[in-house]
Picture 1 (tube, helix red, strand yellow):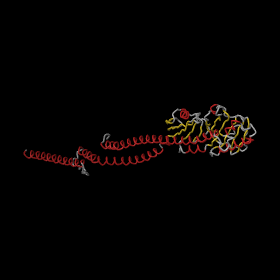
Picture 2 (cartoon, one colour):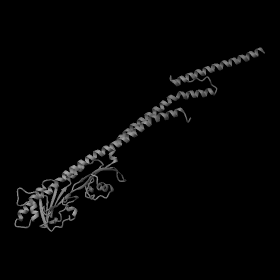
Picture 3 (cartoon, helix red, strand yellow):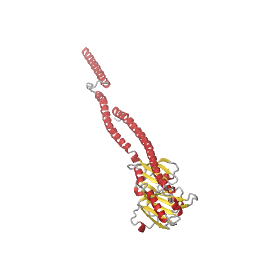
Picture 4 (cartoon, helix red, strand yellow):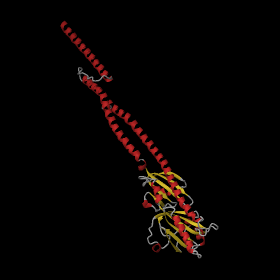
Amino acid sequence: MKSSIRKKMILFLLAATILPISISMYMACRISTSSISDHAIEENSKLLYQGKTNLHNYLELFKQLSLSVYYENLSNQTFTLFKIIRDGVTIGNDRYMKESEMNKTLRSMAKTNPDIYQIRLNVDKDKRTYLLVNDLIRSETNVRSPFGNSADRKPSGSMEASHTSHTYGIDERIKFPYYAPKTVVSLHRPILDLSSEKQIGFLSIDITLDFIRSVGEMLYGGSEELWILDGQDQVVYSSDERRIGDKLQENWAIQASGTTMPHGQYRSHSGSFDGIILYEKLKTPYVNWTIVKRIPYSHLYLFANQMSLIHGLIFGCFLIISAAATIYISYRITKPIKQLNRSIQVMQAGNPQIRIPINSQDEIGVFSRKFRELMDQIDHLLLREYRLEVRFVSDNVSSS
């Protein structure tokens, strides 16, 4: 029977059970996903800001160190590094004393921070370049500088992105036979004559990535990505260290480094990455870096997906129990109706003496009992009428 009450009851009870739970689970999942996303953006924005602050304070140490060229040496008023650079090292009869003072000052500068790998000082008047590596100082005249463009010679200085260190044109085979190149960032600053603002020298400080790496490693985890890019999309640091020093051409990198906003976030749905991208700008007169963090949705919603899986398993178990209980209850409720229907069909077939089974005390049981009483009364009336007819026929036969 296509429209049986049993089927209708099963469908109704299942719908009344499953639909509210499914809708509530869906809404809870959506709200949880939105809440996780907002919380992740807020927490990671704070994290990137803290990372930017740490890097800024760290780079400021080297900025102040590069300015120490202009400081007066109270212990030696005759020769200060600035005077030596301005007047020249090899000019005059006091070359040895000048070189001694300059070497002492450069070594003192190198010891201020363990991340300093080497210091290059160019004295324009002598056309001589000095390089300090591992406490060893060597010099050479008429060295061709690899930094000749105006961007590297801004009065405020400039920060060169990660690259492999080199000897700044000094003959490595002769002067530094055991030179070991490292990946460094470099602070370049022209040294100016304070009276004429004419360049009299050039200072470069090469810094290893140890501190930058330690800061970067605190800003990401798992499948997250962290990138520090300079203004030309050159990679200063990356969670994928194979890309350090590369120039990125990806759209997300160009978008993050090219924006004028100091910080922000946007969502990416490209084929290679699906998630949230946050960025924080580190911009000073001498450095223009962008810290970018990429959080894939698979990582962001990992915990939520695990909870959804647990909820799904619980819902599945509950669904099986509900379906079994629904079918059982439907069969229990509709069984007496089915039995009553079969009894009526038997009666219609000509057997009014069939007994209707009554196994419950509920409304269906009362209805079945009343119906049986009604059938008994009808049966009694039919029998009485039959007896009257037989008696009437018998009386007519006797009188005739």
